[in-house]
Length: 162
Image (cartoon, rainbow, N blue to C red; front, side):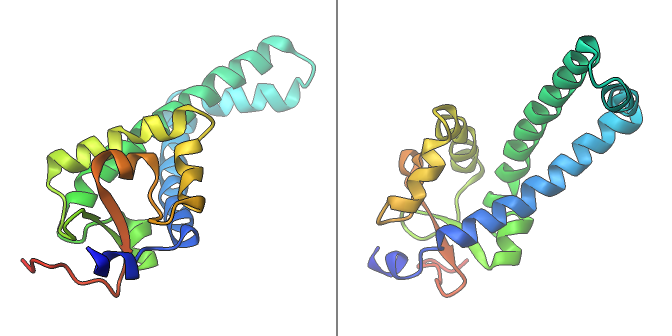
């Protein structure tokens, strides 16, 4: 266990990995809304009719749909990738970090699903569960603590090599 603590990913590495992943997902979801669900017209109305309350309401409704679907897509994207042999999303791989269980091993799909679904707890109260990572000695968010997981750097080697 002590070996894990020597190789915890920094808050900055985790943040950049998240930004890479969420940017990719938001671009895809927004593109889908833009090209297939009329978000192009909503945007055009919003910017051309600045004072129109109905245009603003429609824009905010669509924006909220994009935000909510992007969050769900992010959770669904993380589940299989964090349980995969690479143990991380594209952002995590680019940052050289990965997710391990309390024994330093790869999570199974069930544990990954629990960890990622519990990110809703981390975000629910003003994202305090994510902010917690900044102040926690073990660099764990609430979703990590609930599921006994850690995010480690590339210097960490698993105890049980598969």
